[in-house]
Image 1 (cartoon, rainbow, N blue to C red):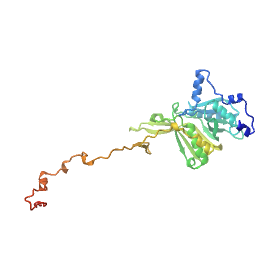
Image 2: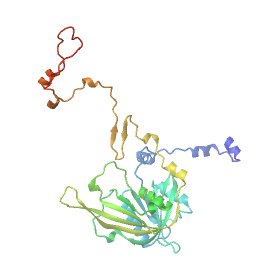
Image 3: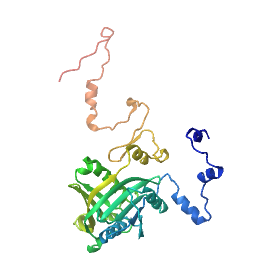
Image 4: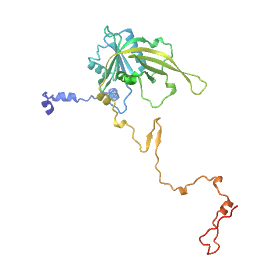
Length: 330
């Protein structure tokens, strides 16, 4: 109450407070499963992408959205209706649409005289828009024009980034992180060679981003390892960056934060090397090397004659006490 009085605001009614802290209760098992699927988890689900059209579109933009949907499938949703949304000006409608479809990644296509063949891509965090970037499609070749074998449904692509701008330019560094988040697919610990069936190549050249999609072919080489060849499978897209809106450093750091419970438990005396190999340290008690059993070799044994030659002789009398007889020469 003191907070509301201090800021000169009217204290809300009891019904308004109940509405603010209202907890949605499922009415049936289907709704309960849907709420549990959207609830926060220690290991989050694979990010899905929402693809939709703006107020006006063109044939090129419609084909671009269709090919992006095929690349992300089954972790994507494509809406057929037009949506009068301006992402850089009205983010509330965009956040409502992504939250309703439970998608943290999105791509919107539009077309106008001022911004022809416009493509907006972005992502959200905690129900709010995190990053936004607007592209202009300069050249596009649909995947339907390539007569090659398509990738398996749900397979992970290999992502390759070519060009120094992805390491030096601030906008392209952010673009690289956005493309990784958009196209990486499900997280897997094991790699199957047969599952690497397609490659996405992003090239930064003269302020443009060239996207090429290749199909991986494994052919006989006469050895155990196959000969790998790449065949262009489409789509082929040339993009120019028009404008962008990136998250602040503090917000981006908060979005990348991992819960402590998900971190692997540290085991004493065990570490990992650069190749992800396990290194262990074993602590043992101090050993008595005099009792250590070693391998006996014949070359290290003394002969019987040499042992007798260097053996300590018997003392002859009391006068030679404390003296030793020298070994005979020869």
